Amino acid sequence: MRIKVATHSGFCFGVKRAINIVDSALKNSRYKENIYSLGPIIHNPQVVNSLSKKGIYVIGDIDAIEKGTLIISSHGAPQKIIRKIRRKKMKLIDATCPFVKYAHDIIKRLKGEGYKIVVVGDKDHPEVKALLSTVGNVDLHRRDLKSKKVAIISQTTQNRDNYIKGILDILKTDFNEVRIFNTICNDTTKRQTLTSELLKECDVMVVVGGKNSANTKRLHQICKESKVTSYHIERESELKDRFFSGKKCAGVVSGASTPDDTVKKVVERIKELTKKSNERGVF
Ligand code: SF4
Image (cartoon, rainbow, N blue to C red; front, side, top):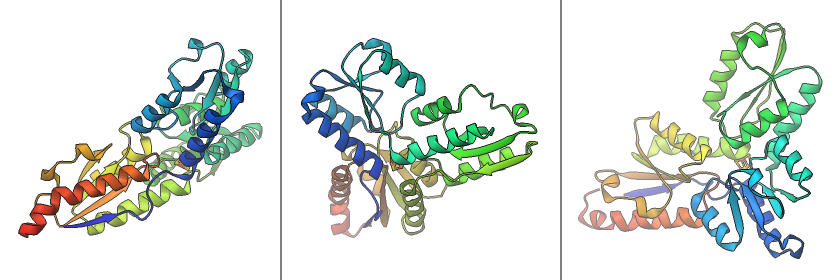
């Protein structure tokens, strides 16, 4: 059986940058008090576990801490959290991905120009919550868009087709003017394109990444929308030999917060699982 690994895998630029920022903070004596992150720094439980062993504590509520340092994850943070941290006189380390910051900058500028902002994305995702906090208290119900200047932006890891559907939905409303921004990051577009390409060649797909990772789930969604069998796993131990029974080509793609090393282990495990069958000529 052939194994085809997407030519672009491992950590994306924003995740690599966030991990480097965390590593530098851990070595810096300025941050000798506890270092916290509000929610996981990246959506990969294995990486977050290893960071917690090094001294990065994940908290669910900003009111649980009074001193120390808070790291803002690659997804950014709502404005009210940043204001609270400043009021508490705690230190802040900002690991927000520059592509996410770019989306915030667009929102701030257009809000100042009187546009109603619509963000197409998962409303419960930390990035979208942070973007909406920049939008302010705007009712995004369609009636509110009527006869207004509207600007549409996307969550950076949105699926292109979902974004287009969201735009078309908004275009059905009544408005005076609409501006559309493509804020899906290049890394996301590349991974989605490569997934679609592998789907043409492979008859089973393995998507590697956190079960809580939105961009990984979207890669799996692209697979599920095809006729090709696919599996979303976090690590190699979840692979079963039945996944590859009767298959000729396995495609491996990974989310933006999946380490290279995890992808390598997955590929090695697929080789092991399919070795005997290959020798017997079953595949
Ligand atoms: S997926 Fe894109 S926007 Fe998100 S952290 Fe990576 S590079 Fe930044």
